[in-house]
Image (tube, rainbow, N blue to C red):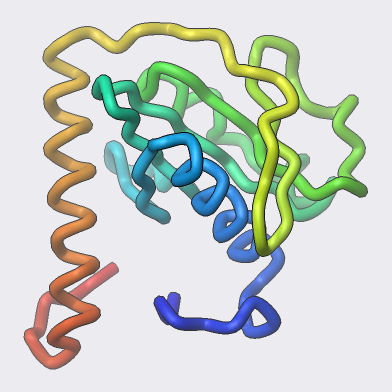
Amino acid sequence: MDIAAHPTDLMPGQMLARGVCRHLASLGLVTVEELVPTRGLRVDVMALGPKGEIWVIECKSSRADFMSDQKWQGYIEWCDRFFWAVDEAFPVDLLPEGTGLLIADAYDGEIIRMAPEHKLAPARRKVMVQKFATHAARRLHAMRDPGAGLGWP
């Protein structure tokens, strides 16, 4: 994704992620998008809180997008809290109990339902914080030096 993309140039899920990231930043969390916690999984947004807490937010732009997601339960073991981010028109009754909910658009978001906390084991937390830092550093390096051959996914 182009870091400076105008919201009208983004896909619906990317617009949700943008608003989610803005909202979480206002709460003191830092975020990265499209992080791979383990092979075969890619989270839409991962947030790191000031005390090292890790949140995963899956952005769903439509009913069909949600219904086609068969991997979301695999994300729970990689975070302390799991959220869905949807727009205000999304049928939220489809979303599973025991998960958090954010309503967002391209400009901001709001936590409607706080996700229950399931604390990560210390070794898993260390791995995830390192992945977060590496992902963020590579993204920044690729933005500053696109010709560096980082092979950014």
